[in-house]
Image (cartoon, rainbow, N blue to C red; front, side):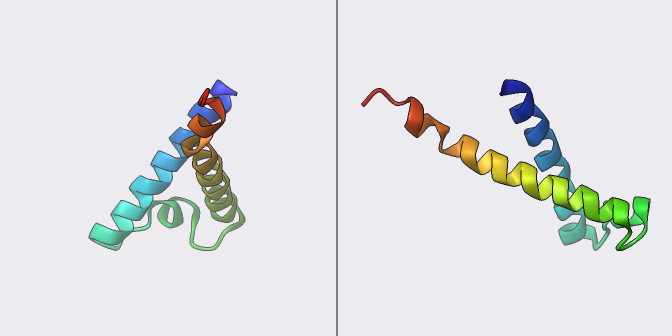
Length: 68
């Protein structure tokens, strides 16, 4: 599971950088690389979203591991 977590974190960071570029410079890197609303860009956005959900579970994983 550790490998999946690292991959999810990498994609989440990529998504965060893309959102930062949108917020600061009004520049969407994914749309500029793969054309706006193309199938590839939708797949990338979907993967980033799934990885964000995986990271939400990681945020609360310490609750399951807590011996109390």
